[in-house]
Amino acid sequence: MAFSYLSVIYSDLVENIYLEGKNLANNKRVELLQSFNNGCRAMVHSKSDYPVTIGFAKIGSPAYSCTCVTYSYDCICEHIVAVAITYDQSRGVSFTP
Image (cartoon, rainbow, N blue to C red):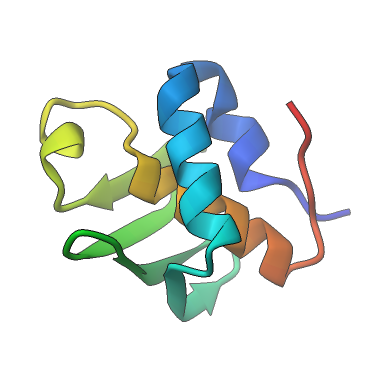
């Protein structure tokens, strides 16, 4: 059975970041560029275009990156959430908090 990437990172999210990411995903602002076994590369079209990568580190913990200011403060940003939601949907997986 496939896993939900959002379910893996959800406990580390701030509620408003989750809601903003969900809004971006629902408004089709995420373009998946490349999917692979345990993650993907994507572009989030928001105030700017933000390249995002999600996946897992070799030790099994989630790994992600974004070029936005929020992520530069070492936080999961709304762009990562939007990509996680879109990635999950592209694989027929869902997560309801």
